Picture (cartoon, rainbow, N blue to C red):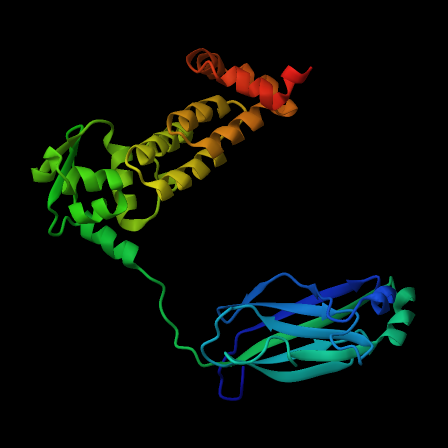
Length: 331
């Protein structure tokens, strides 16, 4: 905070250089990065150069890097480093669109290799604490897109809809151009030569709940949470959505459903997930299920589940694939 009461975004990063006595053996320009961190809405990291960033300086260099690939406006920060001796280094840095990365954005020779050699009696670690404060960022803040919620409201309120899906007696209003833009199947059905293109009311076979979620995804690009599912059986719900998204050619939704279905899978339910994966032609999920089943720690519980027998009988290719993954045919 400055004297006018303005609060600046800031953060504190501490890292330790292990095996400090070996720093002299590091070649110049070889760095050790910290994890990336967010400050002022941008991504940063600190780079430590044990052998220095420049050949002519034989000491440790510490630099701040702004990772964002495109910097349209200048960003000014104050970079402070506190050494174990209590000595403090501070500098004001400016990051801009035309500035080369890491030119002089930090401290070179914060400690010499001769001084570092003495630290071997202090657990052989060199610690430095860095504080970064964003002093000024000239960019104009842009709010996050809320087009999903706006389109969701359009559909929920039924504003100017021109198509109604009748699913098991439940009416779901929609805008044919919106759903057609998200699904190649809807595009053929509602905007092509099929009879549905001339209808206002289109009857859909199946359950209303998963189809409602599919239409909602077309507007919002988001899926329901586990708490919002229409059943406590998450495997069944995500499996239905996986099959439905495959049926309507909504590839992104299909991938998201596969991920959610996999997250809900256990040793007892993996054979059910496998069936959904095969029916929806989701090869990646199928591979994960089969690899999971043949793991020694999961095998007994998975194959002794009630559903596995059904799976093996209805899908004859399952057992040969599992044997191959378990390498039983090599025995």
